[in-house]
Length: 362
Ligand code: NAI
Image (tube, rainbow, N blue to C red; front, side, top):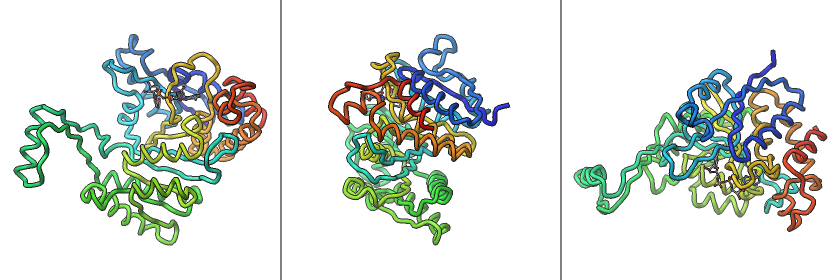
């Protein structure tokens, strides 16, 4: 029996190609993984009546670890993002997004090494919204006025921003535990508590309480989100582990990805108390489907994170080192990296040839 069983959801668009490259590389490390492949997305709707069949969720629950390719969310059809649905179904409350410099990616910054821990379940993304013109909005506006809490224009749409003690405590604790387990020295909590006293203020209060438990082991600071964005651009080396509520986490993690070369190389994971789903940050890049052109780096770095999570730290480190070697050399890289580095795609290689180059350096 293989040492680990991992659910593999190839996804669609470029997903099958980049997950094939990823799987070849992971298998070449020698770590024994049995891949249980299950499909989700538009392609399974006809057969199962839903883009996220129960057996897919069950497979992740059973194996506890999954890795996926991107899945297209069709515009204007009935179904919501499969990715979001999976996170909700499995209560994957942590969105982990490391951003670190790799030479040869054309990144603007050289010494970035930040780990972003984004809360994944509440805040403005809780999905509690009231449409402009609806009876519900009118009722809510009247209720707020009756409480003397403020005046809302009648032609408003309203989205709620719930931030709980439970949600804040578990994400901040996770960030501190991650810092300890990975030899990181500082956690920065990001908020707008000066304005949003009862939501972000609560997040900050809870973060301070949890931080006190780690005093002497992990340093703690807090920063206002706007100043954080400026600080990241001016002095990214000041940041180590960052913990943020959902919306700021979404925005700031893209900013951090931009510092180190963009979404094409940004790995990610969604982690809960029981299961973890690893996935790159980018989408399904439909125009490159089936052309053996897409850059699998983000998917491969995502697999390196997964190996770490599985306790296969050495294999994860070897994958990371091999990716760095191939990108640093710059000869055997996909079109996007070639174009960034030379201004032309001449000499670029395909998805699988790039994977071969990584395998050769493991
Ligand atoms: P996208 O990330 O697919 O593409 C943005 C740009 O980056 C495009 O120019 C694309 O060609 C390029 N690109 C992305 N990944 C690349 C790669 N590995 N190699 C080379 N070039 C790459 O974002 P977009 O276009 O907004 O979304 C496309 C679809 O993906 C949508 O249906 C969206 O809902 C879905 N999506 C799925 C995600 C997931 O499964 N977690 C995450 C983000 C988007």
